Length: 92
Image 1 (cartoon, rainbow, N blue to C red):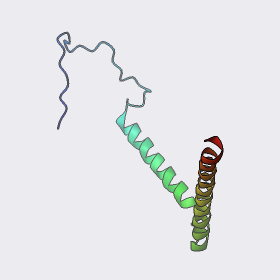
Image 2 (cartoon, rainbow, N blue to C red):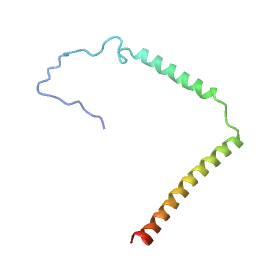
Image 3 (cartoon, one colour):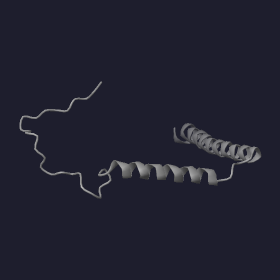
Image 4 (spheres, rainbow, N blue to C red):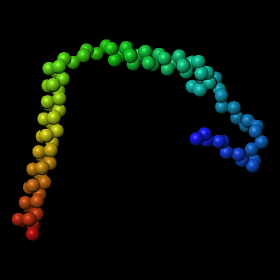
């Protein structure tokens, strides 16, 4: 679906302030394209600079990440159980 521009009664089509000013990012499309290509090249260069993890390193990082998540879940579970016991045995 193509969005049609709105038509206003008081619009006579004149340009009050031309916003296409030299130095603004939208002024020259060619410059934008060149900058975009430069950024892509930089990102690509940064991505290829880093060393690839070996399988054992990836397994170790994964294991420790899962272990950290389980530790957090265990702490929340213990706190929940202690809160429940406190509320049922002491508070009520």
